[in-house]
Amino acid sequence: GNVGIGTTAPAALLALNAPAGSAPLAIGSSTATHLVLDAKGNLRIGTSTPTGLAKLELTGEVANQTLESLSLTNIALATSSGSRLTFRGSDSSPGATTTAAITGLLTQHFGQGTGALTFSTLNSGILTEAARLTGAGLFGVGTGTPGTALSVTGAGVITDSLTAKVFKATSTAEASIFPIASSTSFSIANLLNVSGLGTSTFSGSVLIGSTA
Image 1 (tube, rainbow, N blue to C red):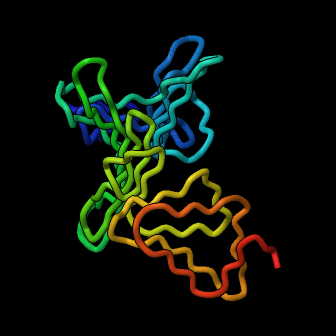
Image 2: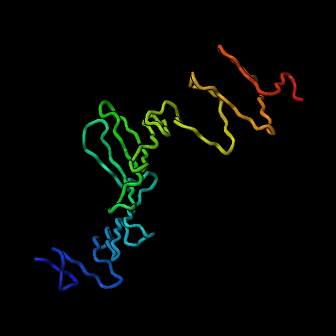
Image 3: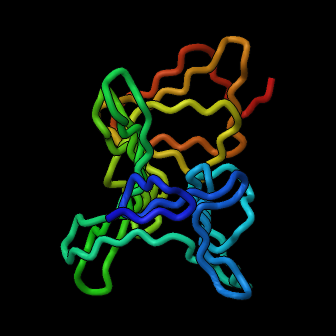
């Protein structure tokens, strides 16, 4: 019951065997080709000419607006439902292992709705959320509940300059420390205000009202 095109020994219900250099499957009209499956198993939609080596290539043309090239949909009407783009790779165990994922998450399904974008990575064999962008535009690293434009849970290293209008300590148990190397100066161009109960400790010389 198998049908073969270009072959006398079809191994499936429909087997296509194109000549060398030709695509086994092409769908289109008299004016354009809309879908091509080439001999290497690469699928191109919207173009017959490959622009790279991608296994899936989607091409369209919409002027002066964003083209929605790919849509991932989860039709479940419930909070915490989402659609995920998954990245896989091979490791020591048989089969593919999920190494990372980007998930569009529905965080509120009533009213006008709210969503979030989460970024997950493989950590000690478990796919774990590493960062999240909320519907309010708040970005959290190491936390799924960022409370500010940028929330980081854990230590951070900045190798260049850092500019901020205000520095605030959020812990009542930890001390705010600015360690300065002995060969490096620390300058405050405006006023230094110290408020609250407690003791401020300066290790070294402190010059007030002098630049020398």
